[in-house]
Image (cartoon, one colour):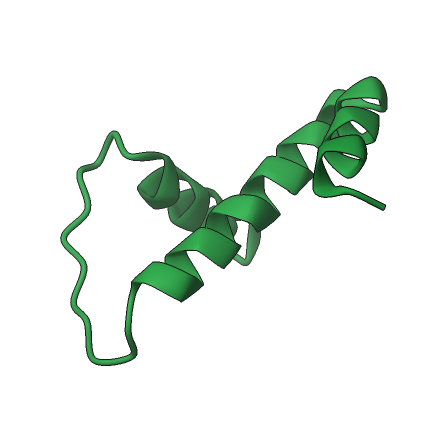
Length: 60
């Protein structure tokens, strides 16, 4: 199934499904761009920082 079709189906479902698909695609991009020896400096208003912060809060 082409990725565009999967993406379209994700948006046709619940908003949570679309958000999760967007999150997964972003994580795939970060993985391919950032090496294991890299350091990141994130702005507090960046999307990745927000995801990490929400994950930390839910884990408590």
